[in-house]
Length: 438
Image (cartoon, rainbow, N blue to C red; front, side, top):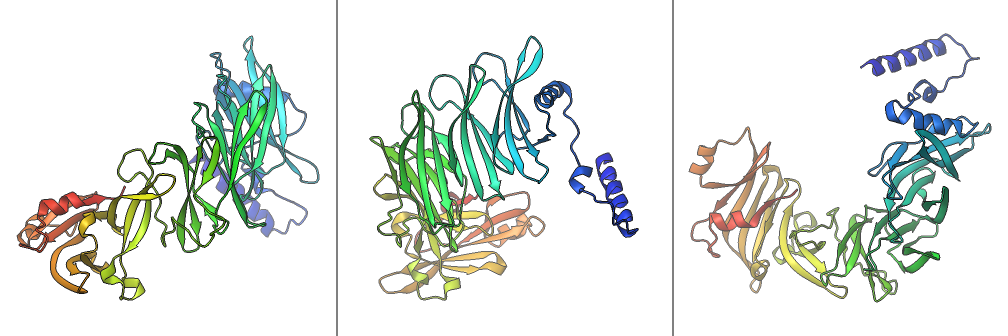
């Protein structure tokens, strides 16, 4: 509260002076909001940092990731003592900004700067640590902004013998470290979407005794506009793999990269760029749908009974599918109701024997039997309804034939099953098909 009052006071003074016509005064709001010096155990570290340079410094805080402090404490050489990594910037008289990484060690109860590396950039996006060469010492992986938030670089640094060394530097859009080669040591995967050249690639780097080695590079779909954070998992044959969801037009695709026999592979085929195997006309993300440790991709399948309907009334199943490296295999087909946060999984052998009618305003879905050979709808099998907890009166709904499927703090999910329906569904059947979307 005190900080808010100080900010309000500063802005009030600034406004008063401006209104008073003080043309000769220039103010920088950032200067009015300068963060205080670090206190406690971090204060002597910051003091050592300031003593290492004659320039004015501005601490830079990573925008993303597990480490959000401008000074990160980490025991990277596994000797039981943490080193301090400080991220800051300096600005020249003409306004040019230079980013810095400074390593500070504690010797004889005194913190001293041991090394400093300069970066051309405007801010730090993320800081990570990983053992990329298997020697028991952690490398520092830093991603930073060059201009804005779209032009970025990632660098890999080692600290050994009081020497901070840059081992690699790459332009990137997303990156991830994981053991894709299966040798027990993490690799660095760099995904780079070059909007200017309209290209996109995934590059896999490994760090060894002789330095950074490029394991391989594959082309990705260049028509995407943005990537989500990569997810490390495996293919259905247990090969380590990286999954990256990407926005494409009005929908989403999932890129997959994996290493087989030392060769980097990708699911995108530049020879058939028009064929997007994982495209779905929605923002539905991939994920481990059946909790077996393998990422599933929601491939859409049109419900045939709605094929002749208006586009807004057509219904699609999500065929949650695993990839083996050569083909997809559906593990579950579900009707996803994202607006209300639930799904209905249907048996594979009869999933095209339904007609589903959406009544979005009533938060209701009607499931009818359907004969695809004759193109005819039959009886209503069941319906699902979503009501608020304020609208829900258990006895009233039960007396009307509704069964409770699940609930959240604000919503109650119900179903009404038609007695003696064509598929012999019971309340327990529909309960087993129902799941909340987490």
